[in-house]
Length: 488
Ligand code: BG6
Image 1: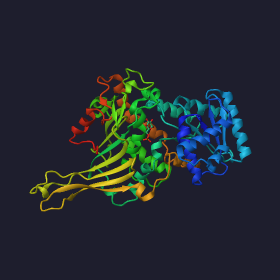
Image 2 (image 1 turned 135 degrees about the horizontal axis):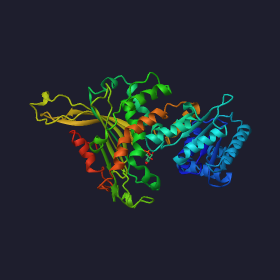
Image 3 (image 1 turned 90 degrees about the vertical axis):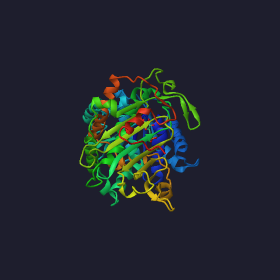
Image 4 (image 1 turned 180 degrees about the horizontal axis):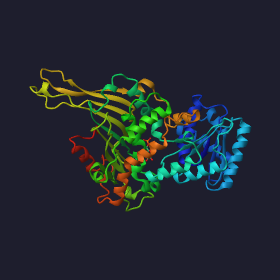
């Protein structure tokens, strides 16, 4: 594994601990080796020290961890400039030498844990040095981090550029949401149970709500975030993964392309929001100072590396429609934001209400609809809400919930979410990675909002207080349809 950006945060916090977890579960070959590549100039010993330290810090490995030593001993480092062809010659020599001395067999995957502006350049240089060519039965694969492009046009351009060097089957576009067990479980839940699929459609489902709420602000990533904004950062990737897994048709197998074909069809069935509708179907917000939990936090405009007059959104809510036979007229409301009151990612399927006629003569005023809630994180699980009679002489209804918690049944294995993705890349299974057409379809969905918002700067930012559920307009988005967000 050759890691570009090996001195960065992603390598430290996610990739190294994930490799350690794989090794713990005997899922790394004995011949495995890591070659770090980054511009920081430090000796190989220093990299090895970091490997040990980061694994301990972020994966809870014990201080005398033998596996950490094993991984550290198999770690190598090369400092170089991503733009300098001579450094790729050195990289090539190093890979050849390690392949021989460690008997790795010659398969290599490259992980681009770098700033996005380097993706195309690195791949071009790999191509020029022949580092991406698969000869003598050895494979070469490239994992590309997000963001993949910054709009539809740039994503298309990037796909075209890297397509000159790599075949689609060599490209692994990562979306770390697909590494989460609970996200993978959406498919298993839907397609391995006979009782849900028959009601999984417009006849029984009133609408779907997807919330990805964070309590964190922009931390130290203000420089990136202030340019990207919440819509780009979360929607075409993570949120649309959740939408497409919820909305897709059953694939004919769990083969990568069978699954991705269906996801792609669901994404293509999403009607782009017309520019006129952006104002009524897309809501943006930015947080002002406030209190999250018990902590007083600054407003977005006072965050480090953020323009004090910034008009970048930190909250988005959208009403999306999937225009096919299964979902026509069933809205998918999605919202995501920073500095919201609690951390929660969940998919809520709200079923249609039962007819009221039976209860007309009783004191029951309304029937609460059934909800199926997939708790993606934290408190991973699934719950089903239904009405039940409150014991007593009068007919009174209470809403009760049946809860399944992953931790109760399966325990909690330490995981960064990257284990499965790294492993799948090594075994050549691209099911959980985004294909070019999916990335482009995702950008097409959000492009109208990007364009309209750019043309019409927000007038009332900041418009929500940190620690609240976003601007009032997000509530209005559902209220206009006689619905409301589930916030308990
Ligand atoms: C990243 C975004 O892709 O996902 C971050 O760039 C966001 O802004 C993060 O905080 C959320 O990931 P998770 O796994 O914590 O839900």
